[in-house]
Length: 119
Image (tube, rainbow, N blue to C red):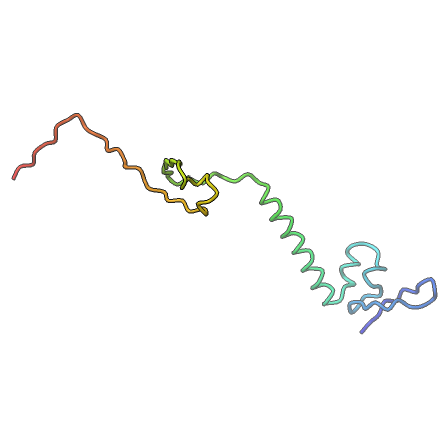
């Protein structure tokens, strides 16, 4: 394995590993292109995973802020609830039991007489 050729102030050689064909590690290489070329395979994989995770996080962050298109709403049902007496849901002693019964629906009446069907 090749090591960085940089000599530190204490006159010791840098102990970081470098990619084959490179002389300096990513910390001592000048410029982005040389820094990327000096990464070993494991360092390059870790760097790529880090960049992809950062981009994914930023992408999802932007996606959550964008306005959403409204979805068609489901039909709603009007419910009428009356509450009174000792069994009212507003009374603490009923232990939270509430029974809801549907109100009878009103049928639309027609002013026209119905047609008789022929036998």
